[in-house]
Length: 586
Image (tube, one colour):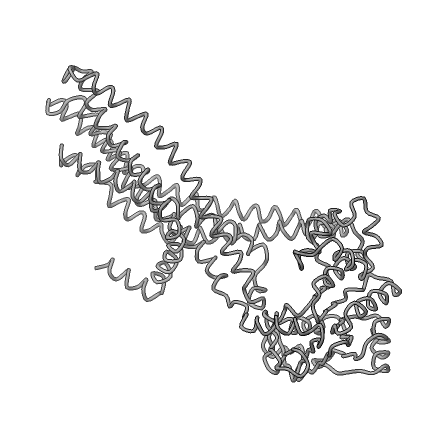
């Protein structure tokens, strides 16, 4: 009755439903590789059967040696050797197949999670740290994959070992079977008590591991900053603190596991002695042979070990369940909407002749409730225009650009775009194909300059890349490099100056050939003359292109059709006097 109440309570708490959901999620991957996993289970089962056979053959061999059935000694010896050799080959095939299935399942889960994370709504995903996401994709995915591979096969092989040993012992001596199973209730109660504790420990372990991944990633990404400010000692202090937390959690879990292990081991030891004593007593009375005694002791150990193995599988399920829960938490986030993909692609095709306009009308936006970035905001940018956004740092310039890109969505009002005179589309992930975006931090990836350029246009020829580099005033330094556009960029473009990285980023945006270009302080590292040359070439390359620039320098404003100031929770269009007032103030 208490067990039924316990299950009912779990259902009320939603925990059983959650566990079933996690298992069903993992089953979706098992189903894809059912054949390989089935073969793996069969190999494991055959290994268990051979192991049981070894115990039985050992009895016959001992009896043959001790004279009980000496006539069969050769035959028994051959069978004994055959069983042992068969186990060697089966284990070799099983290990090979295990690796193959593990790699397939792990890669499948990782690629699936990776793709889902990339397609997740940015606004929802931005609440997670990149290091935490990295650990979920790698650490948690590996845990789930290993469990998928090992759990079902281990359940089957353990049940075969347990069932086979139990049948053999019961058939030969039911009392021995009862003695061998005497420790089962203790093992069951200990496991039931430890399950909740193990779940808590595993969650703590994964959170610490995630924090460690985040810390390592941020440290190496910002190593130059750390060195520049002499922060190495402080960073090492935090490193040691995280290490200590890792050790403390591991030791606390180990302490708990050791106590439960001691209890179950002492009970197992007592049961083992009882089995051995009972077998010795039967032998002393002449009821059994030396071979039968050997088999009884072996089978009794197999019974205890198999039952403990069944119980010990539960922590594995718990660990995998927590990992699955952490993965499902991310993969269940809202996805980017691609409903208007075809309309956006059609608008891009028309843009060569018509261009694309961008609008914000009566927009309210806040990251947190009632903490408004701005309200009733209006912005307009038409084909062939350069529109600037100005304002103090942190007032909403980059936020506005993210709204136009559909990365964020307003609480009120509209953000829309399209070809002039045609049906407009709401800004979303589907409309991002209409934009080329150059962020404040010029993002360059490991690989060559050409590799970075082709990220936005894989089929681009060397000549097209060169034209884009020339338009961005980047070819003048690229052609002087020893390997030209095939020169390695290095991580985050560390071999180039900030101005060179900006020009490479602009060239990549030009190669994408989108009708709307966004420059978020993207020319701040260029001198005034180069900045003007770059902007003029951008306009000349595509006269219908719409350009939005977030900037502070007056050299940009002189080339703009309109300038909007973002300040004091609002957006207003300003004239030359307003621009000058802004420059004087900031």
